[in-house]
Length: 218
Length: 218
Image (cartoon, rainbow over all chains, first blue to last red; front, side):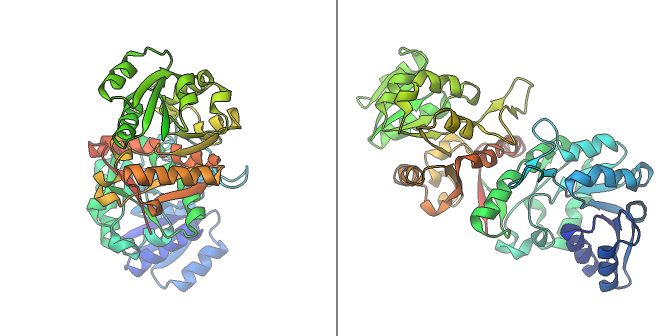
């Protein structure tokens, strides 16, 4: 599959590298086509790895991942271009973290809004699927790194078929058991999953590790 | 132990009844001393059960539980009286849920504030401990109702000794293993646990039951 990764940070890099390892073609997009971190990643990841602008990556991918920082996501997606995003699945991994008032961060979109639904409202032709935003990127790409994969992901979005495809992608590539991916409903449920970040960050501090995840015990 | 329960709703009733069952003396406080729901509860719970105003319950208890609705908590605590709350442990079980814009509710104190810290700031002599606010009341009073108690509570507050006493109380009465009660730090961490409510409510809808809890898998 052709995958477009928007963002060159740790999350984008980890997802892009993991998809390459599974045999996919991946283009990493950033503000400029010669971004240094993307160039380094491309060089290290063989013939299936390439880089370009946000627009290049969006045009390239059959499925796209928004791995930009939440504060820059709309700007990056605007640069990617509405027409390049149209009809595509965009997996929104970002969180609207606001570090401007110090640690721990607050959320810049919160309570009666969220980043996921803001992206969906801004790009109505795109199939926005919110998932993976509630855990460390090293766990995103291998559920089995923790407790034999016995913990949960949350997913939401307006398009049922898109959510199903993302579930399959996560299952087939990253060992996520489909029964452990909890579907919360439409994209407004991003409010629920993005508001996990305030406790995620505090748990990270309290536990002294980011290698943990939420499990919903029934 | 003498326990003061502020609030006569389902949470207050469940906690009060469970403490009576464990042999404690419990006074249920409400706006007026003859509240019907409190009278019914008192009648059903024998000689260790009594009712009164918020001030009566606050004066009575060695340890107090705020089980009022979040929107009424400050009013109720003001009625309880600063002097009756002073130096006492107040376990804040409430969440600042705002149902005025429909379902699912939003939070009236959120992001850079919380109900827990607002109560602490309003009553600086009280030892506010935030816990139990992230799960159904039937689970609060018996951790073993789910997965042999193998799931988590979160606790935060400024007074270490108060948190320790609350942990012991939950262990001794409600089967909470102390290692499953995660201490997040000072009372500002209420921001983290109160912001679990938006996803709790959505999970309640998605799972069709409130009998679930968060487990932090490491």
